[in-house]
Image 1 (spheres, helix red, strand yellow):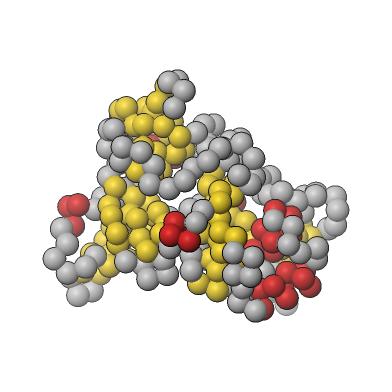
Image 2 (cartoon, one colour):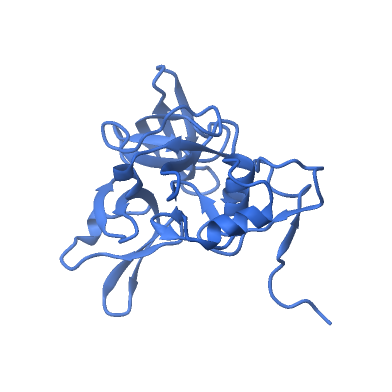
Length: 251
């Protein structure tokens, strides 16, 4: 009889290389449930609490922490150890008062940047798709799986793909739209230059097999080029969020 449904297990050896787990410590690790982020671009809550933050030693302790609703992801209590947490998500631990934002790290993976209560109530989402839904309303699909309808009276031309929205969480109200244009501040979310931040100097859009590219200038003055799809706008003159250092897992 064929297997029904998706797999619920994942072996440690073929797990994404950026996961901070011991490959030969055991045979299996937690597999992310389908949700906001794909498997290759997220961490599970179990890995976050156990391997990264060290608040739990085993899965039993992870479940005990989550069952009380003490862990908030983007302001919403999450109780599934397999829930995926990815780029720009905010993590709040109610008991200890810890608050973090998940950002890209140099050479791949993620790092935790400590934030305050005000920063935890806002997150950035990149617009991946814009479409019209029944009723004539414009819907924006963000990188974390959210679908947001533009408010009445809003101009559709002010919101384009690869632009960034600053939204309140968990209310999902649009606070500001930051366009992808020269002079704005960005961070690289994928590729060889992942984790590097800088000001956008130029955008080269191409058709066909040649990838569209963006030229950025890092804070140290060095210029580099990366694919357009890898650029995540985080502010206009400067970053709207705390970026910290791109080196370690926790800053």
